[in-house]
Length: 313
Image (cartoon, rainbow, N blue to C red; front, side, top):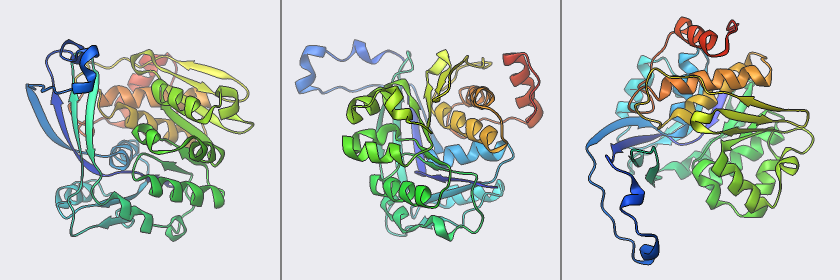
């Protein structure tokens, strides 16, 4: 079975700021904010939520199906997908606009400031889940154009697919009522602790209400690991230790790939969380969101080292 990922495809421009933002932003002067950060490193990479998640799913031996749009400058990405034998049947190429782009500045404390150009992302609304011949194991609705997210979430729910709502940075685009509807159409909700806090505030729902009777809530905590909530239990997952921390960008997308690849294989929630953590640990070791590499044997070895149990993947 395949995993469908509806989300963005983008070029990432990742920059390192050799200080911390708080030293350059005066809290009492935010009404006239005018700051400039001199970065000491910059790299262009392949990114976007759909691209990043699909990349790690492919490393894990899965078959991701991306629902997304790319711009007229997309040949670099198409060459990349061809080398990885990735399915591109459900990617629209717009011949007028440039591909979506993210400009990400990371400071020494791993805080990030991001500017995102959506490009032709709105055209992904032309894609229909009904056009996929193979029934997916799950459908991930990740950050992209708001209308696209709502459309694909509704289609996935109406078709009875396992549906994952991953609002990410797009959470502020939705009203409280819209977020309630998105939650109600989902089987899984995933986000970092800040995003889930905003989700709770905007919907007016606490953790119990977000879960309802059937949903699972996955909250990532960075180097502190993650917490998985279901109606039956709360599971705390420690973070798998990377060899180095070169760039946190994209670790969350790798986490998602690991979690739902394990879910597709029928593992329990604890094992899914541990798979996710190991996948995320490889991502932070490389500068960029699709630069990490691992073999399945290397993945199994790190899993066993981190959790002192055999990896049955």
